[in-house]
Image 1 (cartoon, rainbow over the protein chains, first blue to last red):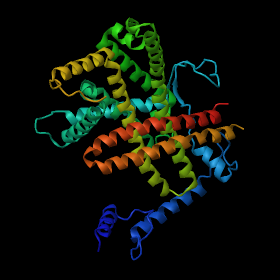
Image 2: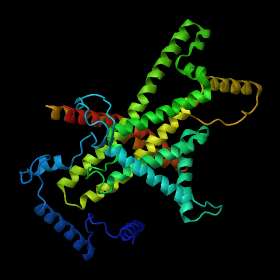
Image 3: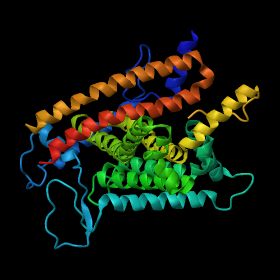
Image 4: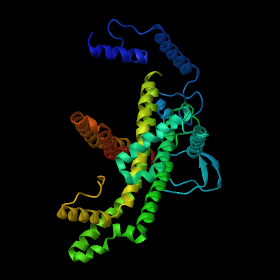
Length: 350
Length: 70
C-alpha cells in the first residue's frame, strides 16, 4: 500500500465518509449515512407537500411555478426590514438614493445581538485571567496571538499598537458574517446577517475611515498629515517638481475616498452574494448538498472578515507613516554607506 | 431588459477570476521555491486576492442594483 493510499484512507476514516462523496471501489457508504440521507429527503418531501410555497406577498393556495418563484421566495432583498419605526408617519422612501429614516432594522438588531455575544464571550473567557491559562483563556490567547502575528507580519512592527482594533474588528465581523449561516437568521423578519446589509457595511467602513484619518492626524499633526496630500514643500525643489507632487497628492487624496467604498462594497457583495447563492442552491437541490456549500461559506466569510480588518490595519499604518521620515531614513542610509557604517537597525519593508 | 444588463455586469467577474488564478498559481510556485516563507506569502496572497476580488464584487453589486433598483 503506497503512502498516498494510506493518507486518503486516514482522511476518509477521520471525516467519517462525507455523505456527498462517491463510494470508492470496494468501499460502501455505511447504512447509517444512507438512512440519514433518506430521512432528510423524506422530511423534504413531506415539507414540500404539507407547506406548499406561495408567491411572495401572494395569497395562500396561489400556484408557484418551480424554479423562478421558489428562488424568489428564498432570496433576500438588499434592503433590510424595519423592526422598530420611530417615525411611522414619514413619507415612503424614494426608490433610488440615500435617505435618512430613524428606525431599527433587523440587521442592526442582529448586530447588537452579535456584539453582546462576542463581548460576553470574551469577558467570560478572560475572567480571572491567570499566568498559567485555563482552557478558555488558552483559546482566546491562541486566537489573539494568531491575529497579532498575522497583523504584525503583514503590516510591520509599527502596527503593534493597533492590533487590538484589528482583533476587535475581526471578531465582530467574523461573527456578523457567521451568524447569517445559523438557520433562523435570515429566514425570519427579526434577524438577518448584519454584513449582508449595505447600510451596516458602509457604517463599518466609515468607522474604519475615521480611525485611520484620526490616527494619521494624531501621529503626524494636522499640518504633517495634510502635507501628504498637498505637498507644498516640494515647491522648494522647483516649480515643475512642485506641480508634479501636487498632482500625485491629489490622486492620493482621491484614493483616500475610494478606500471606504471598496471596503464596504467588498464585504457587502461577498456576504450578500454568498447568501443569494446559498438560497438558490437550497431551492434547487435536496438538503444535503447545501451543507457542503455552507462549509465553503464558513471559510469564505472568515476570509472576508480577515480582509476587512487587515485592510483597516494596513490603512492605519499607511496613514501614520510620513514622507519626511522615509526621505530622512534614505539619507541616513546614504550617509552610513559613505562613512562605511552598518545601518542602525533593519527597517521593515512596507 | 434589466436582467440582460445584470448578466452583462456579471461578465465583469472574468477579469478578477483570471487575476486570482494567476496570483494563486504564482504564490503556490513561490511557496514551492521557498517553503520557509510560506506564512508571509500566504498572508500577502490573501490580501492581494482581496484587492482583485473587490473588482469582481463591484461587478456583482452593479448587477444586483440593476435587478433590484427599478
